[in-house]
Amino acid sequence: MENFINLITDVWNRGFFGIDLGSIIISLLVILLAVLLRGFTISIVMNSLGKLADKTKSNVDDEILEALKKPIGLIPITIALYICTLILPLSGLIGDIATNIVKSFVVFTIFSALANGIKPIFEALSTSSWLTA
Image (cartoon, rainbow, N blue to C red; front, side, top):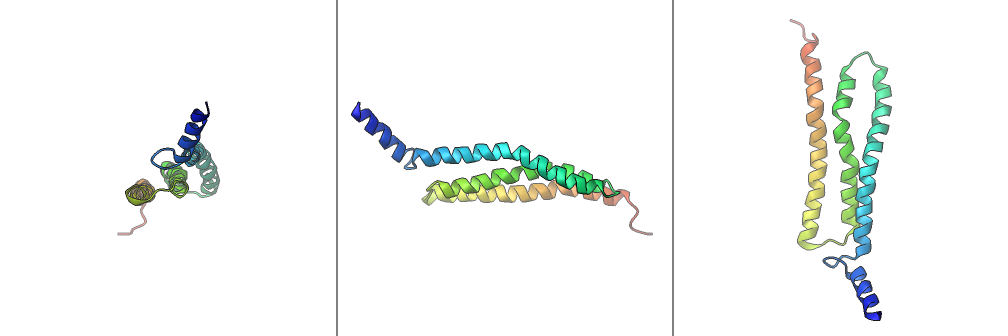
């Protein structure tokens, strides 16, 4: 029985690929929390920005806010992945891959927001007569 307890202690300390299970569990909890906060963040940010957009006369800002709903939801996930790279003692090739994944999420979030926001802006510019003959 004592060997079994030693085995459990050894697995808990060494864990998976040299990363202790405590760090792995904390990282999984951070990602789970980010997924749960994703919806909360979207609703809070969208409601507060929606109140500001309701005060304006144009519908362009409403369309832009609707287009940015998904990119805003990516922000907590990106932050959680960055926190996981800080928690986990990753080094070498695995550390470089994790850093590149976080960088990719940051770039994807930024360009997703830009790509989703362009369509409502161009639709507003094409239908309005802000250019004179």
